[in-house]
Image 1: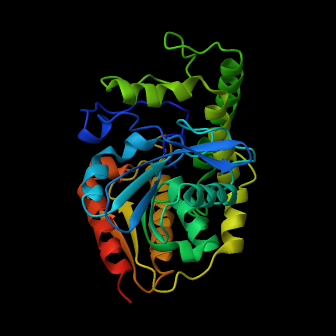
Image 2 (image 1 turned 135 degrees about the horizontal axis):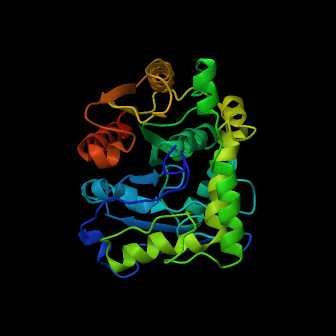
Image 3 (image 1 turned 90 degrees about the horizontal axis):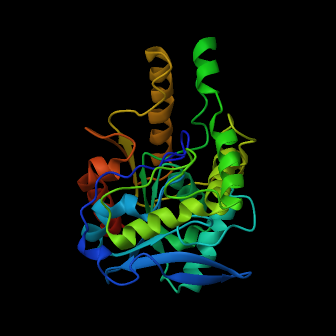
Length: 329
């Protein structure tokens, strides 16, 4: 699901400052979406159509750093922070898939992003992308789903021991503790209380963008809400009910579904348990692709969950293909 798939430990890989991070305010552009709330969205490139990127749980704009410039060479590329993350204001509703889609819809309208767009969703962002396409179909001309989450991904059978390990919930209590610490202003760069790890070797703007959110209660509250509304091990899994209620055929929508060649599932469970999860994971991706007559399900070798960091060329190629096909009948 992204960086919030376990306890919230955000440690970014070493990063060389790319050209797009050198511009003034390249990480911050707040847009009023109504209701007294602002969401952050930054765009680069001048091509058409626009590709809108949706990161996974607990992730941020920098996760797309290896694909941003290549995509901007043939399409406009827009990256945004969901409510509570990055520079965006806190949400005014629970962070369910439908509410996330509604926020993005309001943001694209308010920011005057030309639609239809190509959606690129990673992990839990993949579920949010399909929810958006379900609800606002005419706004979407194509999708690239990068090792995406989906309704049904927890429909596997584990041994009693593996099930006990897999259902262990350390995340919820930690997030509630971090919310309280942030509210009391007890989190600092020198004392994280285990709530975060400061990234290293980042440019000033990147460091400011990534770390300022760690001291905001909304960062932990939004992350907790996203996980509780999706993962049946942590909450009521409202997202799954919403997705199944709104699910529809994607017709002939250009659709690429990428699956990591090496899984990143819970290493504490048995090999048989991980295999069971992996089978459901790949089958779910195949079924996602089958929702469009032009859908493709592709296994990406030598990659883990963050395919856009391990094999960025595969993600760029998928986006290029969708952008090319989007204009064809």
